[in-house]
Each structure stands twice: as structure tokens, then as C-alpha cells.
Length: 333
Figure 1 (cartoon, rainbow, N blue to C red):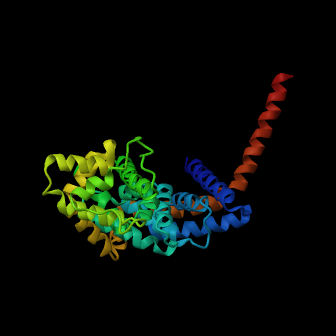
Figure 2 (tube, rainbow, N blue to C red; figure 1 turned 180 degrees about the horizontal axis):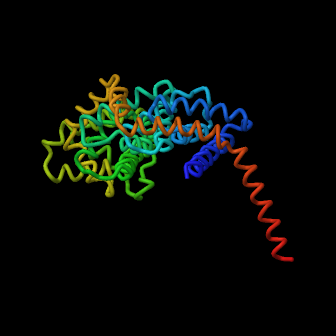
Figure 3 (spheres, rainbow, N blue to C red; figure 1 turned 180 degrees about the vertical axis):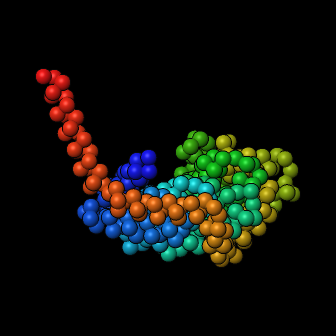
């Protein structure tokens, strides 16, 4: 039974090895060296070799280099403290870094921002990362800072308790609407609604969306100005603002955002002031029973890959197949 389990473990590692081989274009022997590295990393991080390999595979398939391996560690930290799959953590974190044109070395700082806001709100680091991955690029282009995006998404999660995908898509739609205006395309491509009235509606409450004829203000600053006036507006004015700025589909989310802008500001500041929250939280994880079990599993995986390595398994499988072929011939005769 123990040998069967070891064979199964070796097969899983071999699958991970093949996936990495495809992603890197390396030889099998070269890729085995990566597996050994990830096995050691797994022991250090309270993870398993296959989990590390999943994160690495997701990173490499995006055209990233093996040398930028730190993000694999950082995404594994996000995976553990955010309670999401290793591959999802890598993909979400990479999307955020790419969206804000940040290097792989900034990954841990981003995870710390998510972890700090996680501790101060009803949102979780993994969910924040998923929502942000859907809108990071477009949010950056319209002038919403990374910290402010985290504050906006965390506030919507905190107040509405909507799913991470729904919130991410809502913010993406709000941002896209403003992007259309900046591009002088006054029709919302999602709803088909007229956007030409946005400037006039906001102008009536004393908020400008342009610094001059051709230069539009950052959306983060516009939202700040609207939020400061929002509580003093009457119902008709609020409805006009919500519909113009956020559209029919997202006006409720927009209203929540403007009504709770103090929370957005607070969580934005929490994100900006973060330091080593991710490492502290991850340290707590490594003290758990599950982390020790994972480290033990990583050691078992190494033993399995040595004793029941795939080359042996292939030989055994080929031999068994040959034996069955002989039996089949004898039966036929």
C-alpha cells in the first residue's frame, strides 16, 4: 500500500515535471533540476512540491523567465494567506504587476498591501487579488492608484458582500466607462448608453472631469471630488450622478462607493502604509499543523521521486504491458 502511494506521488511529480518542461522548453534532465529546487522551496514554505510547481508553471506560461523566481515564493505566500490555488495566486499577482507596470521584485509588497487590508476589512487577500486582476490594467490607465484600487474593491466587498468576480467586473465596467469618455467615444460599449451628458451632470454639482480642453483628470481624483459633495445632494441629483458616472448596470455599486468613500480612504491608507504584514501572516501559517504536514509531504515527495522515479515506473509499466500482450496472444491461440 505504501509503495502504491509512493508510485502515485511520483506520477504527480512526473506530471508537474512534464508541464514545466513544456513551459520552459528545457530538456527533461534540466527540468528535474527545477523540481529539486521547488522541492526545497516547498519544505521552507510549508507547501508541497506540486503546489510550487503549479505556481511556477502559471508564471512561466506567461512568458516570464525562470530567473525571476522570487514571484513564485511571493505568490505561494499569497496562496497560503489568501487561501487560493497556487496557480490562481500566480496569475492574479502577475496581472496586477503587469497592470501597474511593476517588476517581479515588487510582488511581496503587493501581497503585503492585500494582507494589510485583509486584516482591516471583511475582504480577504485572495479575493482582492482576483478582483484586481480583472481591472488592474484599465484602472491604472485612467488614474486610479494601486492603493486606491485596493481601497475601492475592499470597500465594495465589505459593504455589499458580493462575490470577488462580480466586484472585479463592476469596477472594470466603471473604469471602462470613464476610459470611453477620455477617448472621446461617447457611447458606453457595454450598455450602448450615451456618455455625452457625464460632463454636464458633474458640472452641475461643481465637479470638473477635464483640466483643459484635451486633458482629462484622473478618475481617482474625480471620484474623490464627487464623494465630497455626494451627501449634500438631493435624491434627483444623486440619481443623475449615479446613472451618468456608473451606468444602468453599475449605478448601485457606484452609489455604495460614493456613500462609503470614508472607508475607501481609510483602506487606501492602510494599503499605502503596509510593510511586512504578508510575512507576519505567513509566519503564523507556517506554525500551523497543515504547514508542517505539507513540509513532511514535500520530504515524502522527494523520497518518492528518488525511489519510485518515473524511469522505473515506465520500465515497470512497459514490462507489464509486454506481459499482458503475451497472455493475450496465448489466449487467442
